[in-house]
Length: 132
Image (cartoon, rainbow, N blue to C red):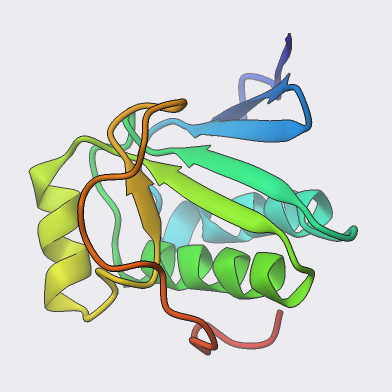
C-alpha cells in the first residue's frame, strides 16, 4: 500500500490498495473545489475498469455541485466497466442521497473493506452532471 498526499493546496490524498485507488477527500466538496477534484478524478477514471473508492468521512459539507461530481465519476467508472464505492458513515450524507433520489445509485460503505450496508444494488444507466 502506498500513500501519496497531493499537496497542501489540494483537498484530497490518494493511496493504492492492491488494484484499488482510494481517494480521501478532505474539507468541503462544493462549487469551489469541484473543478480541481474533477480534473484529478477524470485522470483516475480514464483507463479501462477503474476501481475507485472515494472516502468521504472527512467531508463536513457537500453541495449540489459536489453531488454532481460524484454522479460524473460514477458515470465515467460505469462506462469503463469499473467499480466505484463511497465511504461514509454520515447519516446526513445518506439523507442527502435519499432526498435527491440517489440512494440506490451509489454503493456506500461505512468503512473501506466492509460489506455494503443493506439496501438496493446500485442502479445502472444514471446520467447526471454532464458529459463524462
